[in-house]
Length: 92
Image 1 (cartoon, rainbow, N blue to C red):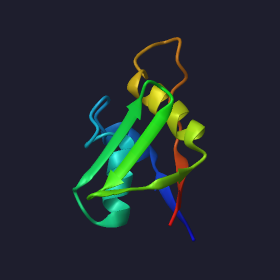
Image 2: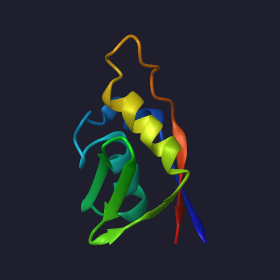
Image 3: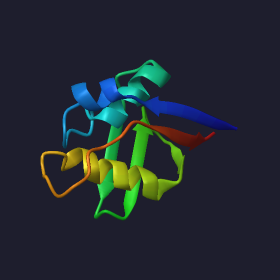
């Protein structure tokens, strides 16, 4: 089963850049899974880890998530495109 999770413009606006528990993706995960126990990590720009509680989520299109995180964390840089809302796809 694939779960679709929208990362909204509100998540982008109200999230905290560089904060693995308060970033835009973390906000979307909290809303979808109805918990505050989430963590979003991008390691070396090659791997992404999305965790809810002690469970690591299986992300489809991991490169799209990494691109979003890069744009989001660097959105104050004029040379980096602004992040756009997108839909996370999670394999469950």
